[in-house]
Amino acid sequence: MSPRQITVLGECVADAFAEPANTSNELALRVLPGGGPANTAASLARLGTPARFLARLSGDVFGRLFRAHLETSGVDLSSAVPAAEPSTLAVAELDAQGQAAFSFHAQNTADWQWTAAELARVDLSETACVHTGSLALVQEPGAAVVEDFLAAAAPHATISIDPNVRPLLVHPDVYRARLAHWCGLADVLRLSEDDLELLLPGTPPEEACDIWHAAGARLVVITRGADGALASLDGERVEVPAVPTSVVDTVGAGDSFTAGLLHHLGARGLLGGRLTEVRLDDVAEACRFATRVAALTCSVAGPNPPWQSQLEHLATADRT
Image 1 (cartoon, one colour):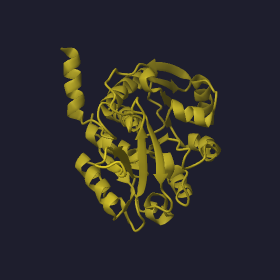
Image 2 (tube, helix red, strand yellow):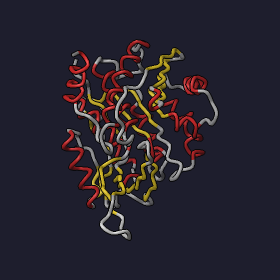
Image 3 (cartoon, rainbow, N blue to C red):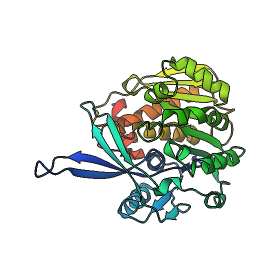
């Protein structure tokens, strides 16, 4: 079965990584196109899911980089909005394990200026799932507009949300205040163990899943890096181990996991409603696929998700 379209809404971020410079008083930056929603859209398209990205793309040098990257990945940008504001920039520092800490340059940038009129023009008749999250759901003035868009889409499409908490830019209290409302809109909630600790400090993952189920989310998936993932479908749980890999960095791994999860469910015709046909075995299988996608993303520098052919090659190698 060919997967139906998934529409992703959110930001593009220029991820700048420090590299050795020619002299001691210089800092060289290697800039890669990133941003959680953009990474997810690119990963979906590379996996073979028709992916449309709703973004406000600046005309600056970074905006042109985003557009080229997304189009090369096969993402449909026909509904993207040309924006007069500058692009968002994130400067990443990597630790010895490849984990990234970001500082953001995001005030009054293009990504947060959504208007109701811009999103009112979007046709969702061919869309099985709408995915969003990260800063687009908390940065004003556009955050409320995005929430209204999700509410309008929910009767017709599966809703997927990744909070992707960025405490250096937005205080976790802002996410906490909105999370129950998001769960009321969402069918799928995917977040990292770091997000969990910021949103519900000290809460066991199983208890957190039950809290979010009670608020409305049917499927909650918590990714745990090298420890794999915990998935909870209406309180039924399954743990899926991570795929061993040589980690270059972890940038974009969670976004790729989300794409792998949604792609796998969509390819089996399980998206397009309230997940009423989804069973725990379906979730486990989708999470196992998603861990492979995330592992391949970790094996290369920056948010560079794998193509479907790479996964097919990996599967062939595993069988031999």
